[in-house]
Length: 360
Image 1 (tube, rainbow, N blue to C red):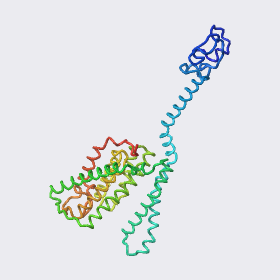
Image 2: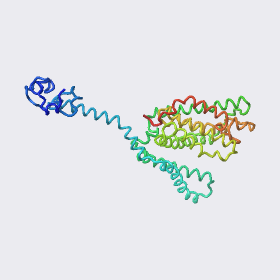
Image 3: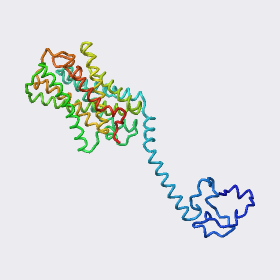
Image 4: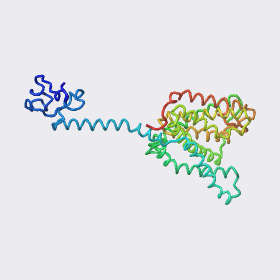
């Protein structure tokens, strides 16, 4: 095609300006011969736009305007999520991740001091529990602000996997609860068949309420902290695979495994890492919903408490390497039975290792 440079150079080739051309007007029949009307081919980039209409005509201008608007919408849609991710990454810093929860825990501890002065009869563990509850309250109050500022999230509770349709949340929670029941049933079956435990079936009201408090309280609080906030934050800093491993390691390290003898403490530490990995994969398997991990974690903690509080009688002869670390009520995830159960769960969920945790 002939461009603007060809005409201005005085090219004497016949028909350069004297004959009507299809590109000079819509339909190619309305422009008289010898008229130098603006053409699509005379504009910059003419060699790549032969298929377009004359941009000077009403039809051509409308076509170009509509096409430009559609292209702009497509570009904005495709780049909206990457831009949000870049903004979040720019605002998210290691120091904020490291200091956020310790500062909240310290604030909860300070706020609990006056309560200890008012109620001196409280035991140290009860005083610590009050401080932890206050720290959890501060976490709930500040998490939306944290996610908006550091993650760039306009829907923080959805990003954490909590704000979902009730039916979805209930289905995920019950799925996690059933998984916990299956793991505990396997431990009880092996211990019973080996003569290291027998079924009693007794559970008082106080023990039942305590088990329910552990199910919902510990399950919700620890999953919100580790598989909700921490896993999501580490994914933005490190990627999906490394975030999964690091949150499991941190989850294990903050538990009191060091209070046990060295061999049992290390065994429990390994079991806690496996549990942290299983809970992270549970959330990813549920499409980013946190309720399944809450059900699994709470079911294991509350369920095992109910079993050892009267439903199941453990033998003092049960070896720690098999039944778990601790005495007289061992923690099964610190023994071979717990390792095998959690390891099987990890194997079944291994395909979710690189999946994102945040709901799509």
